Image (tube, rainbow, N blue to C red):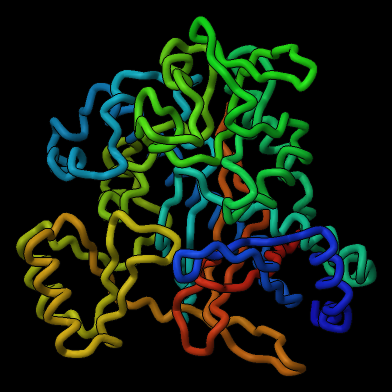
Length: 437
């Protein structure tokens, strides 16, 4: 695997040629940039991946049952497993989605589960991303370009092929399709992951569409060809956030949405991937309850471990959080992409006092976690090897069955000592090898 270092310049030249970008916003300005790539892959043994696969399938299955329940009968609330107001106060809970039953009762068709491996070798789940998780395209194309630059590397290492993600995604879209073409809906080139939108459209054979290409007539969603012809849409894989998806249902001033799309969805005429309303399940506060969900819906013990988490919503946890701010990680439940994450140890006394006041006034808005001292991985930079913190985003696809992609997006912190690996915060990425023997 270290042989790839010799081909780093060639791999990066190819990444630049193909425009493998992940844009970032800095000072409220969008900056396009090549997604920094490190040629040394993360490796998972066959047994290690099998363990993760089993745990991920269990977790995603339970989360889908929760979404069906919370927008339907709400048994988990009646049985007081999760406080009722805790769910209803979630910014991801969308009342317009009440009693809408998605195709085949699948909500989280594509889940991006973020994990880290502690120095004790335990795998911890940090976040469940069930809205529009991005990142699969980057290890896909990186693997393809690494193969092109250094074919010998893949002849001498037993690596599971990861180039089937496009087929896996297409099958998931086909499995829930309600009659018509598959469409990947992008908000446009100023989205951070625009490269991924177009790349996945190519790999799945789906139509690549802008919002203005779609319209609803008679509660049916159509794609308008440039010739003027129209084609019925059976599945739309949207890469637009819920609140902008349909101005007739959500934000009325959204220019990114398709008017009446939710009417077509409610009528059972189109599948939306991922389903609107999933945000309630990847709320950082709801994360605390996932182990209870697994026990409640499946009658099983969780295979994967949550990071030790405290909910200031509960008085006991609030007291512990306020007394231990200096050693905890505080997360704003409404933020994503590494925003709203604060390490108490890095705050001044006055900043900690201000944070404590904010938690006291609005405890539902925050969670607190013990710092997981997760593993460093080697990164090759400026002709030398360096150690950097890295996580793993595993991709789980749900159609007729739940499948875990035998690869994943490994993200690493660009700065030494940093625990923030998010792409939107300037982190880089690696390929993830699952060894086949």
